[in-house]
Length: 307
Image (cartoon, rainbow, N blue to C red):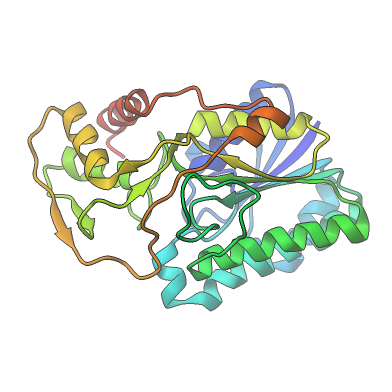
């Protein structure tokens, strides 16, 4: 199968590309390399350097390559920056998607798989979050992702394009960028490895649901196979506080490093965890990597690569 993966040089996207290549699919990666890295792209995949906000480049790529499936991971994912600059967020996460969808419908793409957010989609509701809950995003980032979901449904209703939306919890693992505002495990790992003091926004009691990146890649494999259309939570249904995340990372490094606490960021949710029972029932997916084992793998990767 010929698959175009947008954002395929990035943290999550590159692991999805690895999975697809291992399964024998022909993979084309479309990435502007603003946060992704060429060295993360599987050698079996073809890399096209372009930005999803460039309508002509997107259209040209899709028209020339004519993929059967588009897996859309290219996005702006920084919640805090989306609050400061919602226009930039919308250009990437809404206009960028529309550029892809317009070209996709013209070449008869058979399916769209889109990475979305579970953590920023449901608001401050009682956990765990389920797909039947009303979407109430608290940030421009969450709003832009929900808008993208609605556009996918629109294109499905109007043009019959099947889609699968994977709403991720907090994804972590090797290759995660430690220089943005997200990816707290990567950030802690890099700072501790460099002998620096990590900083937590708020008192550290906010909780998140952490899912390992190879489990996410497997969900993208199963999304290829299913005939179902709709949204699926991809998480672990386990809440872990930021303080406990820091302790786990520090323990793996064998350090008693202390952490500094700063002010909370605007748009932050208090708690988040995803009920993945729908994905388990329909896709046959469930998480397989325990949090502690995943943290160990991340620390080993940072220690080895120094990235």
